[in-house]
Image 1 (tube, rainbow, N blue to C red):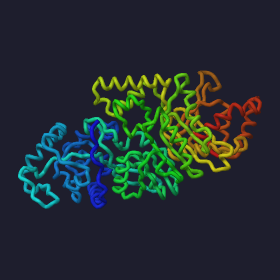
Image 2 (cartoon, helix red, strand yellow; image 1 turned 180 degrees about the vertical axis):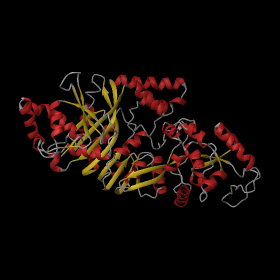
Image 3 (tube, rainbow, N blue to C red; image 1 turned 90 degrees about the vertical axis):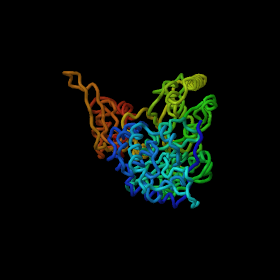
Image 4 (cartoon, rainbow, N blue to C red; image 1 turned 30 degrees about the horizontal axis):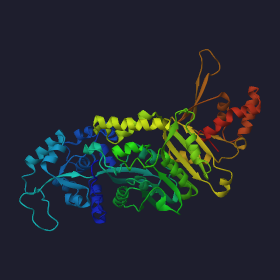
Length: 556
């Protein structure tokens, strides 16, 4: 493992200068989209920096300099950083701990060929000029004759703009995190703090954005979830077992002028005795055996150090104690599925056991499932497996896979859990739970999650007048020459964007649901028209209708 650099300094004066310079340099997501092609931006999302390097190699825009330096990991001369950050300068970056001077040899190794040509051209013209600023020692002493007046600098952290759209408006933030192995070419450190990845974006999109008094981010990492929570919560607390993650969250809060109460500790320990209206967590849920931890180290960002999938169990069992009545918890999770269970139809048993007896309603969705071999390969590669020696990779892979085999694990489910805390009266009748497999449309938005939980406490079905969503359409498939459709599929244009095969009876009920007649009245009419018994039609449509309500095809 490589050694982590010290965390950034929480110097609010210097941080304020960094913020002001970033704004003045127009270093924003919108400006990045004008500097880079769609293909280069897409490549960056896949952790491929080379297309962006090619396009920015010759650009001298301050935002291009900052992008090359902080996002693409390319060294820059101190003078270039002084021009991009005129208030803070290269010295200020060093003082904050965001950058360090390197020698010519290190710079030559780090500079891609295109950038090296650009640097050479700059030196041929710019370096002899008297206007090149010198690096002045803060003590006031003149630099020694052997010191470079315009040294190469390298970034010690990833820093990048992030555009957020929340109910209170648009925000332009800058988020610092540890450099990835793509930027450094080295394996990650044990205490690596991730930036904004795919899982983070998924949870951000899913989070209910209703105004609340208090919110909690458990396992805050770089603090991006907490920044979003601060847009609609009066009080935000962020916790993490990692001291490094807490420090980066504090730095990012200061950089973006947001107030966040950051506390170090495991899971809910730092907030014992407190309750919150909204809790979000992307915990370190990767199922990692001790044998792999010993050989490859424990990555704090993904491995909570607990046995098997028990960290997810611990979060679910402890969360209700920190949830206010009516409060919501949203989390991403992995869970093991025994080898003797069908991963598509019998995956929910383990999660159901964890939720048993808790004063909560729950919506649990398994969006993907992997066999152990694919799961192991994915997470080894996630932590820089491509940089491992072949023998080390194979040792970690076989050890990890053998552990799943000994545990009788046939598959690993990947998805999310949403809970709503019940009040005393509701808890007396027990929590209600719904399990969905692989929502095939869009990632649920916060409004979709809120509605799914609300639907679990809906009124008595047969006495309710339902309303079909305006975006619902029906697709019919016929055998040529047949007057009756062989297959009916309901499509949802908005919401979850699902397509759901239904029976003709369900289609008829959905078609007649205009908010006027109750479901019971519609079912009775369908039974009369088809010559079936009313109870028979009820049994046919009840479960599908509850699903369609939860997914937003129908509302009450």
